[in-house]
Image 1 (cartoon, rainbow, N blue to C red):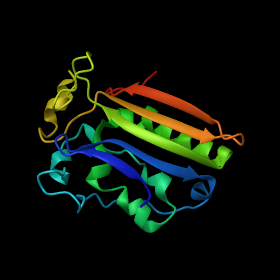
Image 2 (image 1 turned 90 degrees about the horizontal axis):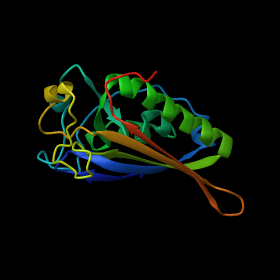
Image 3 (image 1 turned 180 degrees about the vertical axis):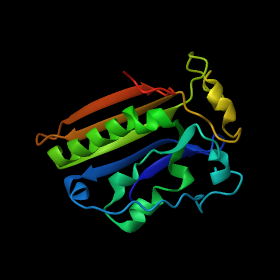
Image 4 (image 1 turned 180 degrees about the horizontal axis):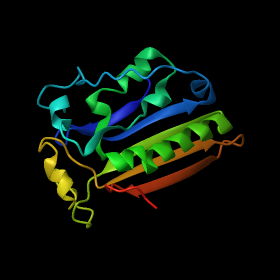
Length: 182
């Protein structure tokens, strides 16, 4: 109800999500309620599970951040379904990605209403041929479950509509690395 997703049941991750974010959403506060779970709309074979993320390197990375869905309890809780998660290196998720998510919330406050599209790219060979698992060359990827694809890049497109009805977009493409950018 609060966001849409295009989910790949072979990779067991969303390829992209899209949602509207308003300044009213940012005016609310809600305590984070972690409740990671499978999506009841998916079969056991299609869905990732907690066991797939049972290792120390990758976070369960929200594609729609829970902080963007504080508009109501159900919206926030629904961001914890694995159909909204991708493996994200912890340094990436808590570093540059968290900053970009924070900037999006600031823009929502400044513009009153923005639209956000977030996606994962699986390009392990650098030739735009999507490998089935999208694994990168990083050895830490080998510790992740073989069931869940690991993105090589993430993107975020943020746009808003000006009063004259034209669209102003911003796009970001970030390599998914196990490092904090300097």
